[in-house]
Image (cartoon, rainbow, N blue to C red; front, side, top):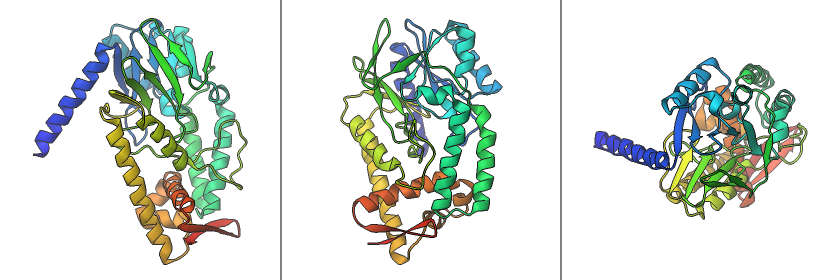
Length: 345
């Protein structure tokens, strides 16, 4: 039975990709060095010839992107418009190289443009913000120091790029044969942007919605702000769930994500994501009912040593679901000695 399900899933994936290809949209799966695996860039055969996302800044990614473009009869030099979906380096790392070689216009959310232009400084601020969050929520200082070193090592997978076509939320990106509606869907990151072909009921969703994994609402410094996590923290999961609600209400036949397979029933998938978040919040609520705990302690109870090796990822998960419980009045947040703990209300 499992083999039949796998065959059926592969057939459904192929059919969905064929539907996209018939509309001139081709998935190019580009390798990344990250646990998430390959990232999906999308070639839109239109005028201008458009590439949505680029893959990370690596020779392997560039080589495979060139091969993928050649399979569709194109070269990097043919790209006329490069669209960036959000601020994570696996999606925009090659953008500067592609723009330089092709002379393409670079389009991205207007609020994201300063981040991309000053990538080095912005990542410094991101790391400082993350350090404050981690220390404030119970992660030992030696772990924080080690994680900052790892983060610094990852920076080369991204690169600064100048946005020549800033996009306002709700704007239209007009190509010859289609118009893409630009929608800001923050949550997974502050800059998540989706592009909707309303005529074809098709969405290019990047990491806003992924079929095989739940997009992690990472705690991130709000765009354009300095690094300060000592006051009110961003409520990434609540923001993300509001974005999902907006997407769920849309009439869509096909969602093309930034990783993995196409999505043909976005409403059912979003409903399952909501149920999952509710289950995880309830589990955290049961842990906190036993004794007051920091977010790092909760993460360690849920995931063991992964809460150390993937400390910021798991911390973001816990704090997002703690925000659900805080919103509903089920837990209370206390602070002592600069460290926050949660207890049952």
